Image (tube, rainbow, N blue to C red):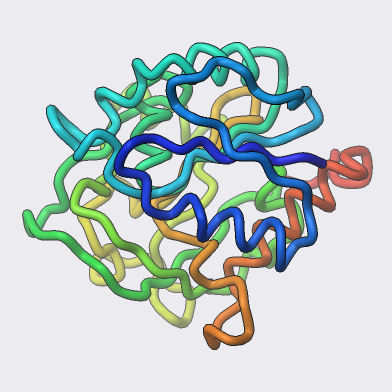
Length: 241
């Protein structure tokens, strides 16, 4: 599997993601510049990651300008052809602005930037990045965002729930999904979702910041391992749900 990491002006987690993919997961990685349209040979069996940061300074609103970068037309086509697209933090915001994922990320309910470890729990094994997860385990993953409050209208939210598209919810250390464990006021404690076709993923927490023993936390690596395992043998996971 080959990975492409998109770099927008203001991206600041691109090298973190490249490091984890290349040196921790031992995968081939290429950087994709936002002004280009070339995906450098990435195919439907590969994955594009939109990393965290503050693309275009988060002007207008987070992700609103980046969604018009030339590379995004290629990303949209790539997703339509079945390729994996994974947006982390600002990448999630961009995917929502580009309508590759439903809903929007609003200002945190405390109107402040939040940077700390939180707990989240996978809600389904019916996606490539959660196929190998333990649905009973709370994962400790860092967040760092000002606009992370997931919001969608009632019909969209009902559709997400009915279609099993909610990938992660904020929880406490014991795995309890409560209002107190919700760091930003996201509806239904939603920390991550996927599209109906289940090949586009978005999440606010940063798994790349929790993927090495030297950092004292490898919970995030579970998601990268899950994606790789699923991509290599999807038939083995087709009954997961």
